[in-house]
Image (cartoon, rainbow, N blue to C red):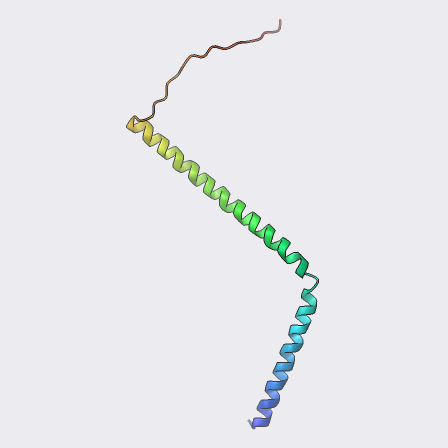
Length: 90
């Protein structure tokens, strides 16, 4: 391929690139104000899902520790009678 065709091809590709970038920039201007809201909502629900999963794992871990402490004898469960006041309507 002759060098002048290579220069013309490069120039044409640069013009196409600039034109497409300008069109994308114009089309994206109407959505730019919604990007922070979309990012905030995405992060919120991501943290909610991760937090829900981690909370169950933490509860399971705490239950296992409690059961181990019961088995070792560090913690004991005792039943205590409590005094109650009861109101009856006849």
